[in-house]
Image (cartoon, rainbow, N blue to C red; front, side, top):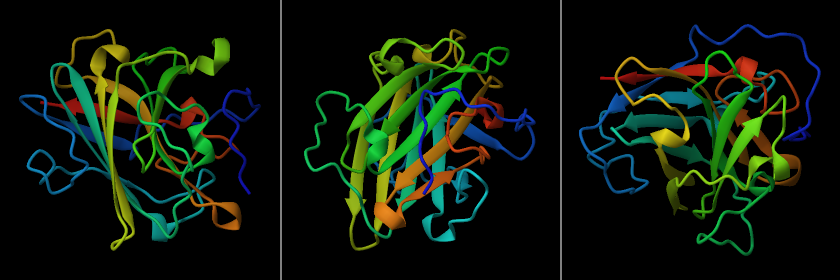
Length: 231
C-alpha cells in the first residue's frame, strides 16, 4: 500500500515540469459568494474544471474519477471537489472549530499550490474532509518549518456535504489569495498546483492525484501542473 511521506525529503530523478496538459483555469467571479458545496449552485454552473483519476504513480482509478473546479475574486480563490467514493473512512471524533493535524490518515481532498515559480519547493497545502474538517500547512521542502508547517494559519474556510444515495461527497474551499501569493490577483497570473485525494481504508485505500508524482509521496513539486487566473 502506498505510504504517505509528508515531510521527509526523498531522493528521486528530476522530473519535467508539468507545463503542458497539466493546466486548470480558475474562472473570475465578480464578487465573493457563500460556500454551498453544491455543483449546481449558480456560481458553479457552467464552470469547467479538471478531473483526477490516477494514482501518484500513474495507475488508473476510474471508479474514483474526481472533478475539481476553481473560481477567483479580488480576495479569494475557490475550489470545488466532486468526489465519488465506494466507502468512506472518516475520523470518529471530527472537529470543525479548529484544524485537525494528520487529516491525511482519513478521507481528504487536498490542494498543493505555490506562487513562486522560481522557488517551487516552497508552497502551501490545504486539506478538507467529507465532514468539514480542515488543515492548512506552510511547506518548505528544503528547510522544513517547525511542526511541519501545520501551525501556520491561512484563514481559509471549507464546506462539505455527503450524498450517500449517489455515493459522492462534495467539498468547497475559499482561500485568501494573500495567503498564497504576494501579487494582487489579476487575469493571466499563473500558479503551480496539484490536487489529490486519500480515500477508503485498509486494502481498499486509494491515493488519487491530478498530476502523478511517480513517487511514494504527494510532495513532489516538480510534478505540479499550472493554474491560470482567467479574466
